[in-house]
Length: 225
Image (cartoon, rainbow, N blue to C red; front, side, top):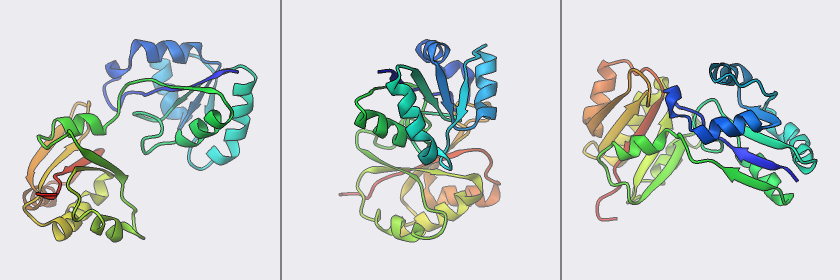
């Protein structure tokens, strides 16, 4: 039996990758990459020339059986996403689940993920939190937000730049304008920034300043819950 490694890659600064992650990627018989073009740049930077196979949400169901067969045959396979930890709003869960079902060892390396630095630097309680990832783009979006109205834990959302204002507007409507929020963008990159305040204040900021980059929105929980 081989081993499946889930390997975090930098969300911004390439120095955030660990020495262990680089060793595993160099030793792997195969690297499953969400986008081989994006990952190819990372691997080239660190002079890693291992074989890659495209593995993303559109082909993972067709690919996973072949991957498990290769693991059964004794290969070492590493899974990486475009940025961050595989399985966190990225492909990785399915292959990990099927490898475990097949009795194959699955090892996840500690490393980069966007929501942890955004949460810790938000100034909001981080002893108890819930990670909501990306909200549905259309169907079910409002229902999902409404279901969190009384959530007492700090809430974490991922959002694309062209939906940041929409998300903040909906949060104001459901959670109220005075709920504290921290909106962090471009984590670990040159233009990293956190905008903190009430939902109304931060919404006004992004209505005046066009959102750019990748966003993590951290919203305070309902008081007394």
